[in-house]
Image (cartoon, rainbow over all chains, first blue to last red; front, side, top):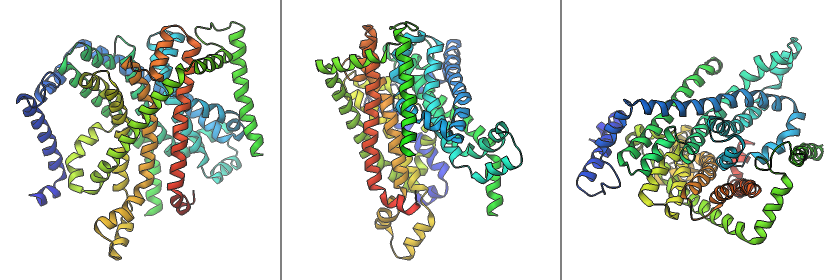
Length: 261
Length: 255
């Protein structure tokens, strides 16, 4: 039996998921788990599926995705060029590293009340929080990325008469991208974490608010289905990010393969 | 030269603070939006002198440390187990891969619902949030150990638990430390959110929320700065420990 499972890892995983769901269902139905605190697996999954038929769910979904995506892309647009510049020109790095180091450990969620005063509660506030949370890891990854670029590459580009702008676009960005990609992945995770947190604390719309609303109204299956939705959103965003990362890095993996084969 | 570059960074930082101070003094921004740095420092000092702030810092530091220790003690062995036993890994793989990129704060409403608004809820949410990252890194660390190391061990007849603890665990240790470092960052972000949400029970998160509600804006900024400082100090203690424990690794890889 064990041997059979060992050769079929997928089956083993599937069985475990089914076993957990079954134990959950039986546990609640038999009264072993308090049904005022946890809804049965079947109810939760049905509720999760049912949510996708409601227009207001899509409204919340769009709001959350819009906030997170806008903040993230703004951070990408600002932090990557800035990071490349800080990595390339040592003077720029010397000027700003202390300021970045001071800002870095401040958790973005602590800025929520301040952002609420400064720009008012609204989309601008959520977007700017996500932007701040995401920009720092991407910036630091870009600086590190440039530092790992072989100076010979930059030297050759200069010798070939490339302008600084061309060096940035055709040498620094591609060569530093494997590093930047790590920053981007941390950035996606942080964007999601901070975006959802802000919605849970201070919002009247969005998926984060949806779960908290379910909790406040003791809508038990709504809570568990909402958490499942947030996990699914994280899963989907991560898959999309990984797809684009793989596409952007295709040349890198190929050049490595050429080197080794 | 090194000193000079440090001074340049300091000069720019001070210049930014100076411009901020000037902008606040000249009334370019209202004090409700952005109070002057001097008034923030004044608020910080006077709040500490009253003794309010020290209590809040103590509460947050205690929760953060407790939760982080729980996360490490529970999740490193769990990650090791998942990484070591192929069957266990296969069993939980779909679940882990689905939940891997989950925004960990999603657990908050469930925790509030199950445990109420007490300290238990706060600590368990922080422990879960940081522990998840730690678990994933511990698991991935064990699984990515160079097979050559293991084969070499087998050749020298080091197998079983002895192989695991003398070869696999040290080889996976850098991953575990990365996980702990990332987990600490998540823990600080989550602590603030949970203390906001918890409403009572104090802590710096709650302090920020309450001072903002009372329109004591310099105090709000002081609280934000303190949380950053707290996270930074815990991170430094951690880096020091990592440096000590991983000295062999840095020597080995030449970093």
